Image (cartoon, rainbow over all chains, first blue to last red; front, side, top):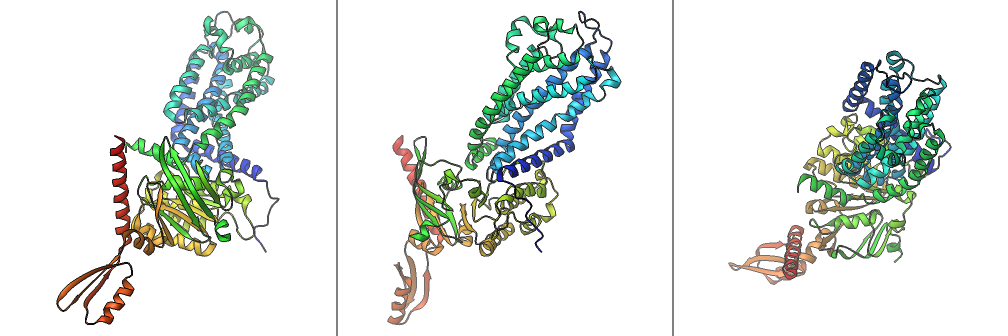
Length: 291
Length: 302
């Protein structure tokens, strides 16, 4: 009459993935209930929306009549992915290395796997509220932005997923290398903001000439490019660097970043979790408390 | 020999140095199954470094280490699942609720259960046992330091470990919580046959909870044994005081029992008093000696 009949026993690896998934869902639930996180999302999201609504009749010159919001939407989505998938994990990882979360999971069997899966799931889900705040009201306030038909929405989801795969490992690597939140500000946030500025995220016409070569190395430009190629009407490609759509190049660059990132991130992460020891934590606490 | 080889913790000739400074200078340490051993010593004696090597979280320079029969640097997940670690936590998982966190951590042990050893422990039972039932739905950020410490202990126990390792487990606990903690340690040793290795700089704790004390100073074990044996070894002889014929006498001896027997056989003795060296004397003596050594080293290097 055992009440705990063994279900088909999962392998330790499968089980760690499952506990990680549960951990990520719990983190997401905490985020949805956190006043700070919700306020941040709502203030930024609604701020952007309000600005776009005030600009809804602004026609961008040389675009054949496209409005500023329609032109800006792909860049806004790309920037949401960039900040959510790079800054989110980088801050979470460095803060949780500093506060002892990583160490605590390290004392559990396969705890590092559980932790990593939890971070990935939690951060990916964490980008959804902002995307929802931006996209759900859009058709009601600003008209249909999908100039190539409703099928474009499916392609948009595909680009967002590909961008996530390309950028999330960068955030994990950045957080693991930086080690503490103050250094994330300097070594991850600063370059990301600089990249967002020069990449012409909110419209291709803002890319300075000297930066055109540089930004095409990074996934941000190509994610925005792919999104524009999907949503904007024929003729808008005149505004792109090179004056043509290259969605296949965009996809290749993003896949390349994803592949390299998915190989490198676990190595960097393993190295950095191995440095998380009780005495290292004690030293950080002492330093912070000025002992 | 066999029992040593199969001891849950076996450490021989452990050495470790950081940046030219020797932290561990040849540590030998064996903990038998079901035994509670305390590593006692002042701050900076090398206690935390020792347990981190035993836990498999730190690479060692030299020495043999086997924990549950495995070199900790090569322990796999099944090995890790048999070891409970009580950390000194700080402010992790601030948004998590107590039961939620303990449940999530408990879950990681589920594939490692065996017929004789159900894993993990029941989370609500464990919360009750460490006195956190009332705080089960509280967020971690709202816990007091003492409550956090209780949770740390619960986390260490939740996988029903064969070996429990605790680093300064009662730092920050009030006397009542401290006593409850000591009772809990004895209970898991009795019920589950868990072996316990703990560090402390609190002498009274080592005396209360441990079967055996290893006194660590300056990276070496300077005394080992039962609390009484350590006191004898370190603090030296006991004093026997008495008066006879109106005169006071004091005699130092390593064997006060034999001396007193002889004394009593010898004739009229009054006000007999045997003052044993206490462990506290021993400990303070060691700390004092160690600190003056360190001071001398410093002078020499200048």
